[in-house]
Length: 128
Image (cartoon, rainbow, N blue to C red; front, side):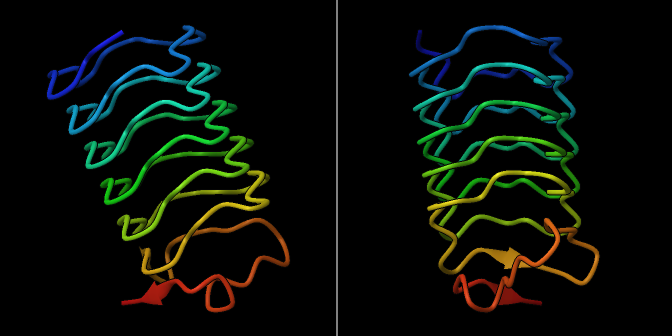
């Protein structure tokens, strides 16, 4: 499925199967992707401002340089995901799975909420 550069802002994509979908640079602002399967999806440069990603499967997904500001990722599975250079200011990762996620250069603020015990500095993230 190719949604590269698509405008999907406010889209209701709850529980959809988007495995390996191309969403590169897609506008997913305030989209509801809760429970969706985005395993190995291409989301590089995507705009996910205030998106709902509760329980979303993002295993091995490419979110490099994505804008994930103020998004909700409670319980999301980001194992092996590439979030390098992404913007995570104010994002909520409570109970998210971040094992083997690539986070070098990702930007966060004091308002960004991580799983208990997660050390953003040790993951190579940058606080602004």
